[in-house]
Amino acid sequence: MKHSLIKTIIMTMTIFSLAGCGETYDADNPTESVNALKAELENQAAVAEFDELWGIYQRGYVNDQAEATGPDYSRFDGMNAEEMHKELREYADWIEVSGMFIAPPGYIESVETMGEDAALAQARAEAQGQPSVDIEVRGNTVYLTATEDTADINDIVINRGNCRIQSNKLGKRISRDEYARRKEADPSYFAIQIGQMGLYAPGIYEYIKPFPVKMKFGQKFKWSTYRRCNIVEVTVADANGQWTWEFQ
Image 1 (cartoon, rainbow, N blue to C red):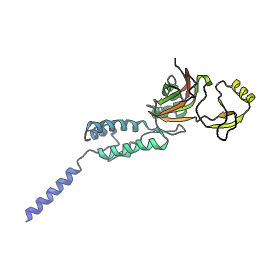
Image 2: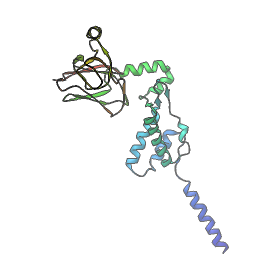
Image 3: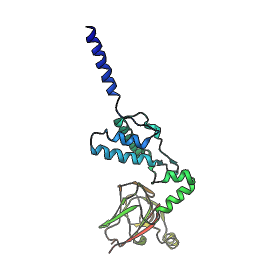
Image 4: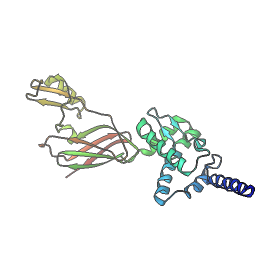
């Protein structure tokens, strides 16, 4: 009976000992411990997702005031592979719904060495040279797809402002003279001339554009004209500059 009790105690201690043998994250050695944790994930798909989420976390995030926050490596200290994977998913979801966006590669490091204003200026300068969206024209509709983590669209002008946009977002009624003055001062100025439409009397009305429009990577935005407009030129103003596409 005594030997049986001792054997049971030893087996129980062994089980608890083995249960605690799994790898855990070490904030003092993030790269090494992350590599060890990935080896404990169940399949290659989980490893790939873990890698992607870890890369996102390392880049930090930026709020709408361009204030950057770097990664806190102590956040996961002591977590096993499954726990850390779950926490990384929740972090990425929080970025998605909070209005923050993932910092550009190297942005956090440049903030630490150059200061926030200089780093922001450099990030914008590096972004110059390419639009933040892809563009496609189908019929009388322009489709924009965000190709960066965030794409801020400030304006879209079709055929240099000569196409009437499909929208019921009208502002105040203006005179023809007022319209002519505004158009002369700004060729891209757009107003809508209508006949009878609901509560609107015939006349020229200011057109209220929905910009700025904020999109996240992969999201689409469409901008439609009336069918009589043959789209041959589209100009998009985004946070990276102003871009013009021509279509034949």
